Image 1: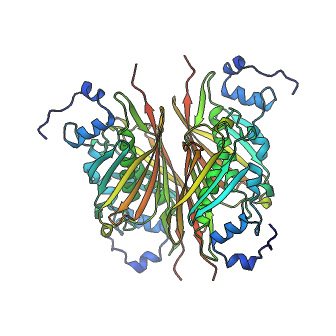
Image 2: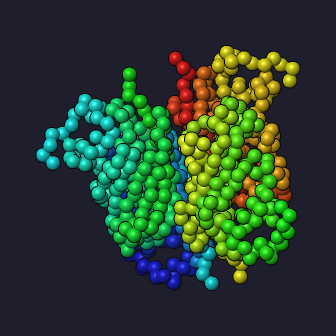
Image 3: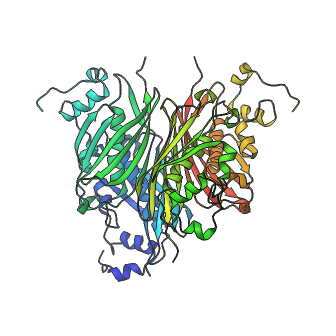
Length: 156
Length: 156
Length: 156
Length: 156
């Protein structure tokens, strides 16, 4: 955490994977959403594969006493979008076009720690398709998502 | 807010709309997710139509400096699911099967207050389809969602 | 139908709406899929609004004796994609990125003629979002779809 | 093909997989949609895994000279829905709730034979989630779909 912060020129020269790893080792600031919601153990497992976890708490609940679907969506969107981010060449950017979430099993504090694993299914020049799976520690599938991203080529 | 809390037997005798209104006037506890994320001005506009708002803050940001898609999803899922909730007969319950979000414009603190309006498009005996639209104060469409719900009939 | 066919240079100078209207009056060839599946009464109702109909036949059936979801999808994809097509400036092209269909009621030959109405919900510079609704003659909603399209600007 | 046709009582006593296999060996009538669109080589690879193919023809084209998205949807819906069908217990029925298709690469007659492989990702008591992938002979991913189905338990 004593490492020097990265300036914009350095950022543009890095691959997406290098940017994500710089965020992990503190050379780039962390994502505020992660602190708000309680995302933990973000990990770039490979180019195009990213994992992120969360321990459900009562603060995540909807009125019917289970974790709100927005929390599943936050985990799955992070895993899917960052798996695409990890494939970017220097100067490339991306934006998420959509997120399709399927809720398969309710999640509560009894579920314990849950992990979303995002993977790139297809990477084109202009678009990418990723999927993400949310599982509990026993490996049961709790929710599933797909997400399409638009790839923005380097300017000039 | 000095009103008496509702017990489980009373809850089962209420329509979905009455349950949501009891949450609004403090006879039922509020949804924890709303406090965590900052949902405000939840409103049942009609049976099958619900609105909820949020004022974007830096805590909602992803690493690229815009509001994280999980926040859009939380707003849209709340508006869509609660619009279905507002159509429930006493004893009926529901569960969300999916949420399909389309991200149309980036949201930042400069966007100002945003409002998700959920509406039931079709209500069958076993399933319901809702849509939700996220707009800024000028009425521009920022994101769109559809959500299917499973209706669980009263036991017995 | 005695009108002269249009060459490629003329095509590039036409708006999307003019192209669709040239197909309707026979100056451009009709879409083969329409003949195969039995699409009828294609109509550009406005810039960004297109309708197309079909009369269900036993040939459209799946093994369980109702119209196969691929037929709903063909109608809804045509209505959604062509509503985006009708907004194109000369030289612009588009491609469909996705189609999300919700099946709400079974369709059979007893349903009679069904009509898909496509409408553009948002038209950006690089992307567009359309929805389409499939209804019977009594106006009941049978299926619903959303579709995102990528807009390809004129070359050069 | 000389085998005796199956009556309704026999049908209700069969598993979903047995029903699909009876359709393949001619004891149950084939699906009309398959003849209309040109589906070939339908195959139950395992309980929860089904494949179906198509050789693109000009009749499948949209106005822009590629295979219409309705054809991708027909293949993917067939593969996804039948993979769920193959998991049914005697007396159980199912209905498709939705189909989310992502179009990844254009398909033309030059693409040659394409195959959709459907797989059940999750099978609950009341719902099931399937995915389907459309690939060319070289294995390239052309389109991807997910589909949720409602499981209807045996009557009584």
